[in-house]
Image (tube, rainbow, N blue to C red):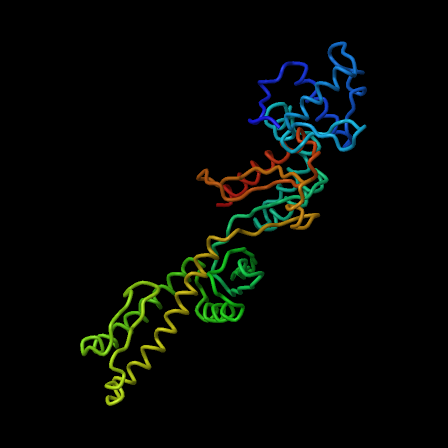
Length: 354
């Protein structure tokens, strides 16, 4: 393999044409392309042996691969990347494809979630691939919230909004959290969620944390002043109240009661700090992903490609994306304008609604 990544501009005209024709032939048929096939309609009179030599050079550069000893060549992932970036000729959007997409977004009476679901189905139908729609996050009041543990470092938050919208977000939970602690967090949040958006819910929890901390400070002040206790890491999430002279406390029932109350408040404070962290992570988590005609595992397959384009709101802020997932031999020249056009229409729809 060469020491550096090859570049289209470094190829001579013959190498560039061989490379382009191999990739285009593969994208069209899905089969390896042989030297004899290329000699039939090559721009100059060259022998199959000459083309084979060029193919070997391109294989050395990591742009082509030979699946079988006697077969032709197919582009590698690096080769496809170079072709898409440097040689792909993107066509105009087909009139029939445009009409299908326009009809999908033409009904102004439906809510955005329904339209985006239809967009996913339309993209899947038009391209014969799997569609991907990343939707903008919802900011209506929360009706119900659930945390579901998926693995040690993955969790799902299910948000049911007061307007009936349901959204799932994936996030990485704080270390040491269990399914039981997630249920407790959800139960607490559901008790105070009514009428609050997700960000407002975070402010409510922050006020609860401040109130608990103030109550602890008030109770602990007397113990610290008398020398029975001292703070370690005061004000930090790892803070502790270290009790000294426990025997003296036992002779004073009031101080012992204060200490029990402080311990209870500390437990409550830690739970609410965890809940606040859950909310922060849930708010930052990945938004809803709608897959039409495929499963998540498609992303882990080395033989798949994703053509994606972001869409923006009226403030020119990226709020989501639409795309198509398929095999590496997608008809990129046709798929790219479809995805781009759809993203532009979705962005206009969101801007008009807002």
